[in-house]
Image (tube, rainbow, N blue to C red):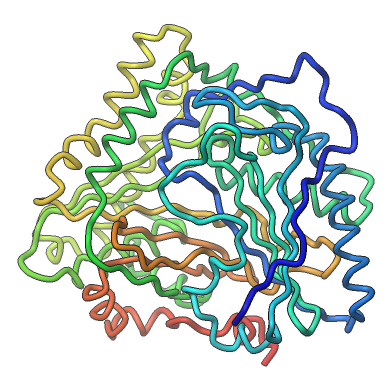
Length: 448
């Protein structure tokens, strides 16, 4: 598969950003996540058989609606100034148009996860964007059949998954000419003010201790609604009456990954990224922009087989439940000393175990479920697939990204592990009774 660049340009906001908004302050929590970008790929079929000229017109319409959307999401049209601010200079989002020398159906029948990064306008790694680089870059990849894959790289300095969802909903609304278009709420910096980069420095030290060296591999494990219902029923106890689908799948994959671990059994640490918006009192609006997230954690001793799925679900649920309104209140306190104390205490478990990473196996989870990406109709209908990013790096983290399936009831888990451990995981008969390994997105949509 060859992806050739046709054009590269900057899409500027349709209206200029007022001078008093020129400098955008990042919030404290924007320093927590080490990844430089929040990458996403949305794939659309040419379901109505649009001609080549019609596809070109649609791409132009995408540019126009993006320009209108950037007026509301004005920091995305700016550039990185430093670790605390964005220069909202209206320089524009980078917009790359490419052509792909194959039919979309050919790719979707057996998608190669290591090729998906070609649909992105930037490299997805752990090297952050430098000062002067665009906050947002978008690549529209047009296949021979007229289907497209839209790849987005938005700086993780300002966007988490929920923020990216708000942006896509707004862009889709503008593209479809909807009367009601979601507006972003940029209150993050006032709620979680940042005057220095101590949290970034602390979090980078923490995350770097959890990196592994070697070769990794990414595979997709897709759980349908019936499999998830069975897992939830198996995981339920008198103390955990109704685990969520994310909790049940997370615990099951944690168990499976620990069982795939080579060598002797060791203690294990799970972390889970938690959306703070529904956990504050009062709740923050869904359209609040920023990395309004925190890190939940759960620890398991080497004797995990005695706990089973039920015990692990209980640990996951307790860890997530600790990210509550009381913690959020402490994170939002004006006093720097109180905030520092609350943050340090909350991250202590990850920091302490991370410092002993050779003796502890770490698994990082993040969920992009229930964010509505499959509702983003930008002129090609609903996406047929919303994908994560495969990895084959020599420095990596054990990472599991949970995403919705197109039906909205299933979960697509993108799992990155050491190559040898992945070979064991992808042959795990218990796991394969609940999940399909790398199924075609078209088959999931019952289109083939």
